[in-house]
Length: 147
Image 1 (tube, one colour):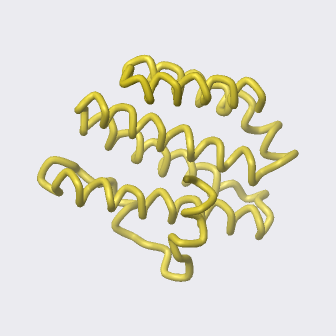
Image 2 (image 1 turned 60 degrees about the vertical axis):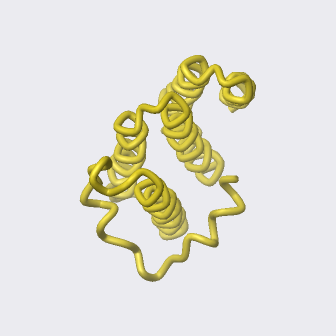
């Protein structure tokens, strides 16, 4: 996680300097670090590794938005949902882990809806998972954790 944090800080600095392509690159490197160690880290600290994964996808989307590449940004939301759906499909998940994944998916879905509203539905093709909300969850439960 330390390498992820370092890369994320570098990406955030690049983003602050309006170096959006560099920010995408650093955020992608950070995401790659998380995905490479996801299995081991998920067993040790599922909340942190799920949060870091979601943050990375959302940060990449935001950086692509800074570049004006709405479709690439939209693709990051799709990838995040696809990844989390694959994780939640695992039969060995504990109930707490399953709830964590659902909450994270709901947060991403909420952010994706805001993104779609900002850029117009005609410009953004939504993934079918976005259209199926998790009614037992609320986006406010995760907003503070991811911002």
